[in-house]
Length: 588
Image 1: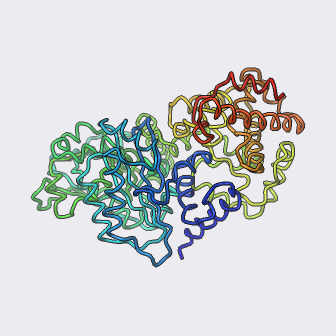
Image 2: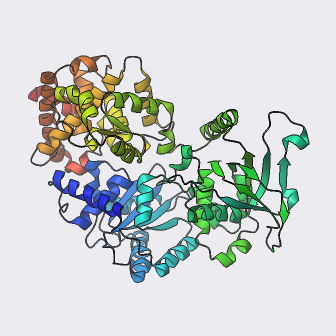
């Protein structure tokens, strides 16, 4: 059995131990649905259960809806043993056709939310449905894989993907390990006149890098990336490599490639790709029927900008039969800028880093893992670690910290007093000290903007320049806010979470609501200066927890009575503060 399957099993055991109140969590195959939504889609714990449809599910085990980006994810999960291969017939019919047909016809009855969202967005040109199948072994079914390729080539707004165990592992860690071997790859163009050389010696230029601008067929980019994958070579610079996650495919790029007429305009629509390499060969001719008559080779390339473009080209072209690639895409080009840099030279290595920084800060790489590399979060990670808490700004940080802290003495020494003040359990394993960056930003948004925002805008927390992202960053940078303030506020959330899990139904207090109410009342309408005083000792903290445990419980009951809406749907609705005011007056 692959070691990563052990990791999944370990996580499932932990769910079953800590989430006994969740129906069906004792069934491993159902708990795997929970794992996928938790670990791969970063869904909020309170919202996961209602997004799992498993059992007579009409081809959908779970789903995610992102109305802001007009994406729907239809998720199928197969918690298989090592020797069970996915069925071709299942993939062809249940995975690829059954749920889509039901949703298109308006007859999907297992989730009203899913059907309504599909119906609302289906005529929008930006709408995309992602069909994703997660299988816990590496027994590839070649026929099933071909069905998926054909489906993707034929459908403009639907993208299907099968994730086998190694694929799940890569997506979980979102990081390709560096390898020591070199790689040489080919770059092609129409002819030598569609390649512009900028050679410092020939042009008598000072302080200018050797470079080439190449009008490149997208097929050449596809093959370049495909070869790097087959060689396990990390072709994306480490600063943007982790961007290839849930939304590594750009819908606009993908849809342009799907349209036989519009793909000819690809060059005009796209900003191009930047590659840094160690060396380039001279340009040589080669026989080609389809606009690939010249080529040269580059050594040890790193793509530093154009990650979305490269990934989207690869994801679409891999569905096309190899014998048709050059003919189908002979008029589809992208601009490639290649720079030669000696990374052993300190000055040129610094230039390399600056090129990565400025290329990406001025473009559209704004997803969570690239944003998480910004200095403000790196600084927080260092400061939190000094105080015994490990801020996870990348999925791979879990593995990094687990290796670093094989014994807990140092962490315990640094965080014991704070845990004791909040009445939290001492850490018994390194993961007990983890603080996911996204969750920290949710807590901040709950304090500043309200508990409702923390629940329903989770997918925007680390989206650069979104309102929740800006709210959190402004809070962190405020002169009144210290590292201790941030940790105390987060520990209040953790105390609420721990208390909730200890109750019979595990529903009160509602953690983000508690942070919201604490900000509104104890902190006198969200006054940052009040946080330190209100969380100064254990008795104050226990009083806050006790009060809002009662208020949360009473609020859920009153809300259900007045609006006939159950708990899981209630936490996604705007908070009725008039009800909270009334209940707090009574219960305090």
